[in-house]
Length: 332
Ligand SMILES: Nc1nc2c(c(=O)[nH]1)N[C@H]1C(S)=C(S)[C@@H](COP(=O)(O)O)O[C@H]1N2
Ligand SMILES: [Mo]
Image (cartoon, rainbow, N blue to C red; front, side, top):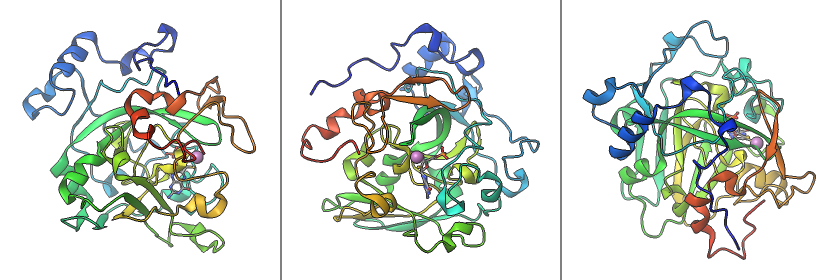
C-alpha cells in the first residue's frame, strides 16, 4: 500500500491559518531548536507564549470561578494543521456527546456538569496503579498547545487548539506491564448532569479503546483545554483523549478511568453498531461508511467541503503502526 507521504507543512498558501494564530518564522525556529517542547518558565515570556483568560461573557463556558485556570502552555509548532482554525463558537456549540443527548445541541445541558474535583483512576496491567487528582496531574506533567484536525465519522470536521499533554507521559508514570496490550477509556457517569444516562438502551458507560502502541504514539493527546481555556464539558472537559488520525468517536470524553488490559475493549459504538463503527476506525477517504461516502468532509464554521485525507493527514506519524495489521478492519 502506498501511504500518503506529503509532510504536514507542504500546504497551499491559501489554506494557511490566519495571522494571529500562526507563529512567526523566528519563533518557529526558536521552538524547533528547543525540541518543540515545553520550555522553562524563564523563556515563557517569548512572543510565542499563548494564554487566554476565560471570559465570563462566553456563554458556552462555565463560570470561571468554578473551574481553575490552566497553567501556562505554549503552542507546539511541530503539528501544523494545514488549514484555518475553526471559529471558536462552532466547536464549542456543535458537539457529539450522547450522555447529554443525541443532538448536536447539548452544550448548555453539558455546562451543568461539575468539573472539580476530578479524579482519574489508572489501573489494570500497570506497575503503579494510581488515582490522580486532575490538577495534580496537570502540574506534574505540564501542558502544551497543539492544533489538530478532528474528523467525525459523520463527515464534518474541525481544526482546534487543544491544551494538554501526551498520553505517553501518563503511561510513563503508571508504567504498563509487558503483558498489557490495550487501553480502555471509561467516561465518567454523572447522572445529575448527564441526562441521557437514563436512556437504558445505550450501553453506558461510554467505553473506547486503543492499543498500547497507539497510546505511545506522539500524536495521542490528553486535552484539558481548548482555545487556551479550560476544556468545556461539551467538548469532554475537564479531561479527554484525542486520536487525530481516527474518526472522532474513538476520542472519549470526560474520562474518569483508564484500564490497561490484554483484552481488546468492546467500545460503546462497537456494541451499538459494530458493522459501522469498529475498533480501529482510522480515517480513509476511499473506504465509505456503509451509509455515506467519506471522500470529502465539511468544515464546521465555514461549511466548506474539502477532500478527506488518509489518516486524516497524519500518515507520516502513524502509518507505521498498521503495516503488520493488514488483516484487520483498519478503516471502519
Ligand atoms: N463519552 C463520549 N465521548 C465521545 C462521544 C460521546 O458521545 N460520548 N462522541 C464522540 C464523537 S462521535 C465525536 S465526533 C467527538 C466529538 O468531539 P467534540 O464535540 O469535541 O467535537 O467526541 C467523541 N467522544
Ligand atoms: Mo463523531
